[in-house]
Image (tube, rainbow, N blue to C red):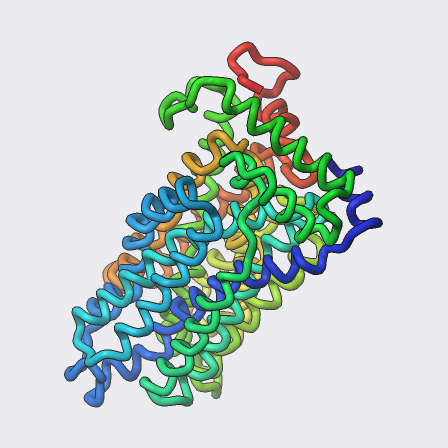
Length: 471
């Protein structure tokens, strides 16, 4: 496959793969805007001039922040049904439609319930962001640029958060909504231009359309030999999986490689979902307001999406060369150290010890940077590479739902735990979770970059052959 990629690079081009990946990943821009919306709007929603007619309580703000994560769990099976029945393209368009409905509802006369309904639609769209889009990117891209194209999603998400933090603190409530709704409309319309996944077309017996899709994406003629070779490769894989019995979700666990791969990824996505940085992103102004530096909380908060973006830009330049395993392990380890430092600093400060005023901000920005560059994107890139076409949708759906559930628990419980036990206890818990993630990534997770599914499964079995393997 890697040799084929080199030949394709020499004869064709990757420009259209980049263009299609950017369009598909544009749903992440809207998702980022929705992620960043809570922090700058909290002050408005809790003021006497709140657009809902009354100031909202801390618990109501926590519910508004956390309910998309719960709704995403419902959105995952809906979008998985669309992606398996109607195709990857229509699933991505459906995501964009849910996101657009979220903004439109917010433009209508507001109360707490309408805000919650709008955030539910935000979650329904977000339910496919971390499985449908990476799945689509994997199936339209060449091996040698897949990691980079897959990382665009997190880049766009971070740009969306940065944009919302930048405009949310300075523009009016409804002015912001009109701007982001216009962006959502443009994204929804442009997504009709992306091609269907070649793998889905071959699976549906649409060979003529699959030739056209591959030729378009690779910058080649439809009768080019390399296009034929790639279609043949996809068709062989498709024929093989159609020739064996359909496997149920629980039947997957009969096979050692799949079972072990799922358990590894389950631990990693739980660590991702409960990493702690997502709480900082949603409650940025609140988390940073205790700093004694002469900087406004809003300006401090603006630094968060900037460092998220810096992290993913760094990752995009090295992920296909350095690999996924080491990057993810380092990201979790640095996050663990950062939260341990934050917790200890807070504990010492509460005991009356003098601590540097700048330390919390610097450590938070470090944690945010490695989250944006490693903890956030890499588990979702890895899971699309670890599992084959036959089981990919089933396992990824469960894994992403688990990540969203942990994110919801983290967001809803962060304020309550911090108020009851102190914010330092929340940070120590995040430290322990990230430490577990680092150990699994560095010592258990197999490398997936540049390797076939068969090679990855062999590594998961820790042996060359296994009688229970179907590969």
